[in-house]
Amino acid sequence: MFYAIRHVTRFQYEEPVSETVMEVRKHPRTEGNQRCLSHTLRVMPRARVFSYRDYLGNTVLHFNVPGRYTKLMLAADSLVEVEAPPELPRLTADHWAELDTQVAQGDFWEFLTPSHFARPSQELAAFGQAIHCERGVDPLTTVRTIKRKIYEHFDYDTESTEVDSPIEQALRMRRGVCQDFAHIMITLLRELRIPARYVSGYTFHSRTKDRSVEGATHAWVEAFLPRVGWLGIDPTNRLIASERHVRTAIGRDYADVPPTRGVFKGGGAGKLSVSVKVTLSDAPLAAQEEPTTETWTPAPEPEQVLAGPYHHHQQQQQQQ
Image (cartoon, rainbow, N blue to C red; front, side, top):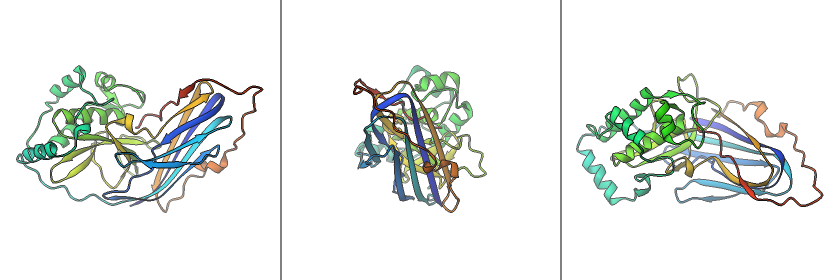
């Protein structure tokens, strides 16, 4: 399948901003069954965009916008090909020993130890006991069972948590979004000594019954299994990741891979809006998403040079 993806992020400031420094992780990965055929990032006001690869192979674009302005927009366009993943093998109880051997011989420590959002707690331990989270008949069945239990025990609610909410909040309320469900599943898998990592990306919604919403980024989990390698699991929608899932970045948890992260100087309170559209490559992009339809007017120059501390940008809206 070929997908055209447009991801637009807009920042609106109450007071003029004098400088912004930002990193962007919206570039789809090329590996396995996925190829990124093209990617562009446009910044308004205009800026020169640079890129680098982080240690996990994620493409990170970064830029600096000087001057004075009250609006900042990032428009990322990608064309991606995703093939259906291969059929999963049948695993047995003997593959637990194979997994333990591979983990002992490999470099998985980052995906086995607690991280910023994926960490043990009393609430998580209680939930694990309630669903009898333990090593089952084989590694693949165990992963599928945990995916199903999270789907059955949590309601999907976009108003229940925030981008920086700890997993305890979702565990207490038994509701959350994909970001919460991914962190809960990652932590449970790591407790069973199954390497697990966070995936940031997009899903294609077409006549499906997904709980995750359109018009937003998505998040799911990858678990390392013998004879399989890294397997994508989507606990929000009770799915094994398929050709409808487009991966942009991987990390220990969301803190490693927010689609946007940066600081700005000056300004005051601001508003953030995000729009995401994933279409088949031969489908036209929505005209209202075209960045050229917006008018950008620089803020008036002050009598004195603005000087003040840098402020952290609010991170991108929750992955849903």
